[in-house]
Image (cartoon, rainbow, N blue to C red):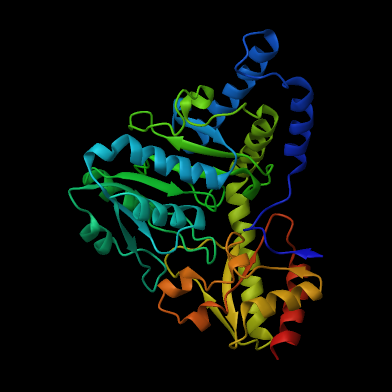
Length: 374
């Protein structure tokens, strides 16, 4: 099989696997325990926390480890809401957030007296800053706006958003799951109060993630009397997985510029290959800011699921969009927000590259697509 669904998940890197195996043998103690094994595990855990703080431009006191991006998103948002609900009852997000965020806001809206404003995308794939500005009320306490769209690779103007929200005294959370290692980030420079990252998107283990919350921001833990992770998340901390996750992040962070260059070359090669074979494809990309390794496209009115299944038959793994939504067979909210019809939104196909992707693999994909579409 040729794997071209790296935006859904990635294999663990050799470095991360090595660290996981070694840490499992050495740091198996509970970091909350007071004996020597616990002390060793806790010291390793704090080293990982310090490393994450340096990579995102934050402080270690704001780093909390989670079971993944979904939990990081949901705990961050709910904890910030609960810690600031005395200040207002209005929230802002977008129509195209990851399902972990979008569904949480629907739940909050349904079960509480909070009101939620859902921002749309403009033709460039960005939120409209004027729409965001007009959406802010005196009662607005939080906005959650993703950094990189997982279906198309659109990059949001995070610094501009952060500056506006800070000026209006609104907390800013961003889902950075698709952004880490692909887009430079500095939480203080971008006025980000909280962000979320997942291990399995950056060649780390599944079941690991990280949430950052600025220590100066008020938040409220979800489970009373929780002692782990500063009261943010209950449960014994998985130190070996966190160290493997941190190792994967360090490698990704170190090679970010190199990775961006490679992904840009692969994107150009693939799109030019489609044109050379005269394959009728509509490509959804931002002319302002685009992550190169995610390509959202559709083919001549064919359903995305059909394209995906036919590619699978030919030994190529691609996606119809976010892996957290495909089971529902619902149209892409990203394309709907861009003004596409439900039928057009159901035609979305996502191809995403990784560090092992080669031009030869893309040649094979182009051959298969040519047979399917023509």
